[in-house]
Image (cartoon, rainbow, N blue to C red):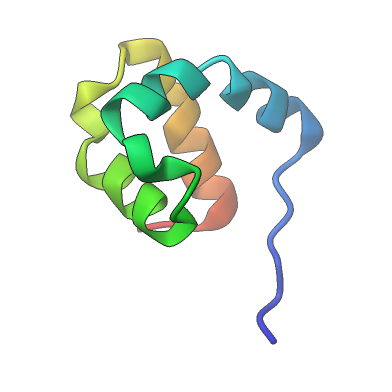
Length: 65
């Protein structure tokens, strides 16, 4: 069983402002969580500057490389 990493509530709320972009850039983001995260990492430059900053904060919280 793997430990879950908690993303602070404030950061989760901030990340919700980029849900539309995430769904457009990585349509499988909700149906395949592992693929979605990999997709967002690979297509990070496709996000708006604001959402890239938020993605980077979330990635740091989750320790994604």
